[in-house]
Length: 284
Length: 259
View (tube, each protein chain N blue to C red):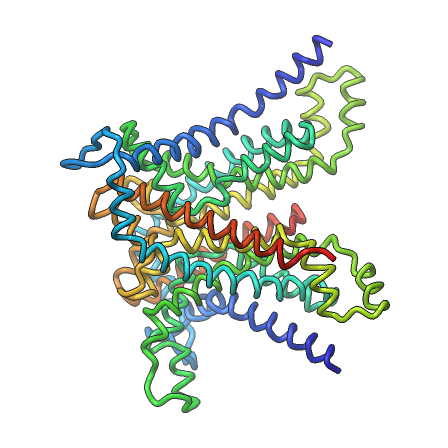
């Protein structure tokens, strides 16, 4: 008996490096970051006097930007999750070449340069870009549309395009174990395709849909590169405000408080999405 | 009839979505050979000039060197630490192991900006100097969960009877691991390491805040993006694409990992 206990204990030692990484480089920094959000700076030095001034300032000055960020991120997350479901369903339902081709394309775009993709979209949507040249060439518009680039629309387009592969894979992973023959039985008994989808497919993949939604929402809410590169000066998302506290403005505590306010809002939105999915996509 | 329409509509929307997702990457590669500064169709001539311009930049070679160091260190570190953890997690009772998996998975769900700023704030309080080392440490946090996920999934399919017989025949845990477990899971480890490397190589946000000076390939792209239109970005983009696609395609092939 003793031997088994010792062996288990020795085996558990293998967890130590991973715990050190998770604890030392993730949990401890986050807790410290939370503590700092209650401090203030004076003459570029942290002043260790806990107070709520940062949060009070966010409450009075930044509720608008937080709401705007949550709105645009929710739009991106909804569009991404819907399109991801369409593609994942296609890959799952088509055993033929098309399914494999789409899966391959998804896996290939998973990695491949976050900044490079943004750059490509910038040249696509620009005044002299391919989209505008095509529109003018087809005489759909007389002059190039400037609003394609440097607008909230551009931010949505770029982030949806970037996030799709990350959303498709978990949804496809959840669809894959579902046996299509079990669904054919429902069809034989007279259920409509939409009925089968609603009652037999969607309820079983709620966790994956939520993962896709949460991932898309969090990445969008925390992004500052895309809004800066394609959003124009009017599209200021929380990521931009947060990042600027660590660059020019050197106000870490305010930046930390902004981060936790945005995270808290994100968790609330994701929880609402979860409740919504559980209510509307219940198994019958 | 109606079903037919719905099915085809799904196909059309799905294919358009995939085109929308892949188009930027295809264009970057295409225009990296374009014989003109203006990025528009039709492409009149092909050239390697943008690659030549890129390779003649001094800062490209420095960035490449830094990226190689970080990527290799993160790949090795993440794979070793993640695999050790996975070996304990598969032996846990189902509830405990589910809890451990979600705990270790937390950094995957955190926006990179938050990871970067929390670490930056701690490092600045502790007086840690930023360097390639801090980049590597930061990258371990979000690459390790992928390794744990992939290796745990592989070890769950693993037939432990073989391991038990090795132990019954008197092999020490280390010998049993080296001669039985390791040869079987080696392809998975290799694949998981490559995925960690692809993620590390592609990261810009965390690297940007953790890097004291110099460049990695993504921060070099960032610098070039800010100086205006420069088609050698296409060449650099195509090279990064080649590297990440190469490693991840190889990884997915080896592990058979599908989400």
